[in-house]
Image (cartoon, rainbow, N blue to C red; front, side, top):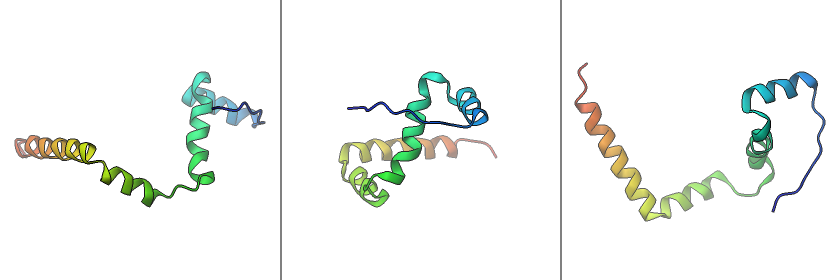
Length: 76
């Protein structure tokens, strides 16, 4: 569930934010920046959760192996 909030920004900051992310993406951009500072989830916990996901890890390994093959075919 989302909550509505009103904040005040310097005009130059607002204009830069508007140019950079666009009007409809400002809230998500700000939330993504603030989340790590206010949530209790540590980065280590999140990495452990990702590593425990066997399907995701298998996909990542497949991608890395394919990338290694592609790079070995490159001329230097």
